[in-house]
Every structure is written in structure tokens, then in C-alpha cells.
Length: 390
Image (cartoon, one colour):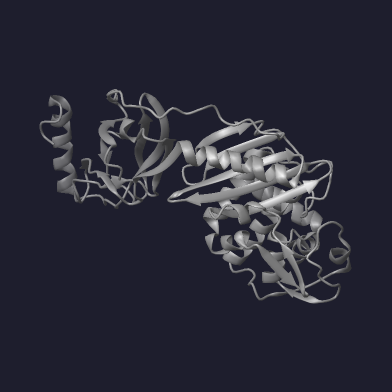
């Protein structure tokens, strides 16, 4: 828990005001960099805070950034146990003939899911992407439908997929914000597969291919994610880097060259790490308060958060953080563990910068008849005289 965070407790019915913190010296932050790109986006992977954005919701052709969703669905199927890395996939003539970048699989051969996943992520293989689409869904059209269902589930509001590769199609588009959100899910949902995105080379059939993400060679903190290019889309790059305990995700779309997308991405990442920091306010499961419960087998309910509470802010301003618990009044048993009972509101100075559900951390069952009757009397007099009988 961040010791500088001032915690206040109130009820939803009568929330108290948050005191204004004393003025603190502030880090001077310049305007975000302007990039030579059509759109760009920078966010913190843990807190989700957006640090920089420009045309972030503009629908643009994603090119091979599309393969982030293709790889995500493979990783999801692996996580659910529907496939394994050692499963063999028969390579169709359709997959073999797919144009563009390849991992050079051969028709009528059997290739492991592991190799196809590496081929999609590192070599940007269109042939590998079609092969997994056919294996998982029977073809690219039904696989694209599956991709779109998951795009809706993940809240990618400006994305539509028409194929698994990113090859040009009039109905295929995405946005910088959506690509960043998808990358956040890749990093957080399936961390056991994320190391693939940092691999610099992939060898298959004695052909060694480099990862097209140049930042993997230039910046040791960069460990993903994916490049893309078509004539229509220009050059794009979704990147992620971790320094100390802070991870950022950046997206640039529509730059003019491989070098430009690397340089513009580096500008975003340097700006984010230089001027912002991410801190953990509360650990998941931490007890933040123990309000009174009426009619239960226990008089108190431990309440807190069910996931880590992270906050991204300008550097050297953590002394301005304050937090308040808004807890429902007159909590009455039964209450189930995990049930929402209020909200944690976090402020930076006078600005509300985050909210998190406040949940019960234990179950309180109904008390016996005598206990409930006794509590009814106590609550009546407590409400009458302002809490003296609690």
C-alpha cells in the first residue's frame, strides 16, 4: 500500500468530502511528442491509464497487426486445453499458397501448433495464420467471425476482421486504441506465452528469419509485440516495454518506413517512462475496513479489493494521492464473499483518477432468531441517536 495515500471512509448515503492535499512541488511535464504517423497511442499496461493519444479511434487498415488477434485466439485455445503445443496441423494447399510474408510451411505436411504460433508472431507468416484458422475454425471466414466475436467481448469498438493475416480487405480495420487494448489482454491473460514476442529469430525448415521489431535489438526493455505493413496501411508497430515495475504499451500506425515506426515508437516510450510512474495502492485481498453488519453470525465484515489497485501518475506527485471508501449503509446479512458493497475512489489532488469496486472479503451468514431480533433493536436505536448503540 502506498503510505502517502490518505484513506477516508464514508457511506454512500452521506459521503464526506475529500480534504484538499497541501500543495506539493510538481514535476514539469512537456507536451506529448508529435509523431510522423497517422495515429498513435500510449497506455500503462497495469492501470490502463492513457498517457498519449492522437486519432486513437480512427479506423485504419491494421495489416499484420491483425495477427495479434490470431495469436491471441491460439493462446486462448491452449489455455483452455482445447489444443496443445504439440498438436499437429495438416497444411492445406490454400495455406501454402497464401501470399505475402511466410514461415515457409509445405503443403500436405504436419506442423506443430508451437511452430505455427512462433511463425505467426516472429516471422509474421501469412501461411501459418491461415493454417491455424483452418485448424481451429475450418477456414478463414469462420475464423474471422470468431475473431470479431472476441473483439466485441474485449471491447474493441473500432475493429473488424475479415481474415487471419491482415492482407488487404475493404472490410478489415482497427484502431490504435483497440490494438493497445488487445495487447493488454495478450500480456495479462496469457503471460506464459508472452515470451515468444521478445524472440529475435525463428528458424523453420532451415530458414532463419528475424523479428521485424527493430526495438528488440535497440532497447533491452522492449519485449514485444508485432509489426505490420501493406502499401495501404503503411508501417505500423505495437510495442511493449517494462522498466522496473512499470509496463507501457505503445501503438503507431501509418508511418513511412520500418525505421520511422521504430523511431516514433521510441519517442512514445521514452516520454512515458521519463514523466510518469505506476504505483500499487492496494494489494488484492487487503482489508481496508470492517464495517458493522446487522443480523449476521458476525458483527463485522472485512471489505477490500479483489484485485491489485494500480495508479499511473506524473512522477513525484504521489504525495497528492488520497482515497475514500464509499461503503453501503446498513449492511445486512447474508453477505457473500466477493459481493460488491461500495467503491474505492482515488484522487490526485482534486481530480478523480480511478475507481475500484469494494467487495466483501468474507461471507457473513444470517444469525439466529434471537441475534437478528437483538440487532433490529440495536439498529433502531442506533439510527435514532446517531450510532451510539453500535
